[in-house]
Length: 88
Image 1 (spheres, one colour):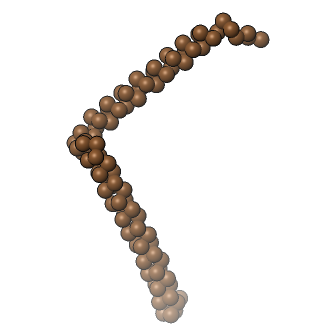
Image 2 (cartoon, helix red, strand yellow):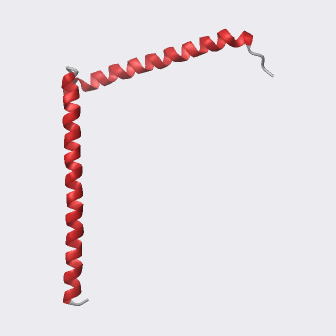
Image 3 (tube, helix red, strand yellow):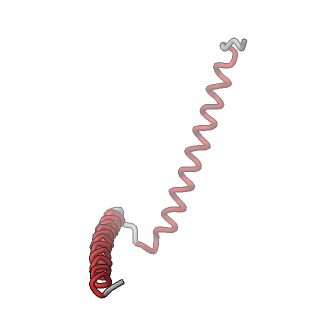
């Protein structure tokens, strides 16, 4: 490879690197904006970042309760209509 080819190759690699850098900077800016939105949402709900694990655990427990209640309600509904369903 002669000097001109090496220069052209290096210039292409430089341009590719610059494009990748630009993309990464865009992703970083988007991530920062998302973080700011999440932080604002948390503050609007009067939850400090330190309270997030407890708040998440509370929400997961409530979610589990609601799923269990739905399962009980569906089972009760199935039981209630069982006498009226003919199985073939």
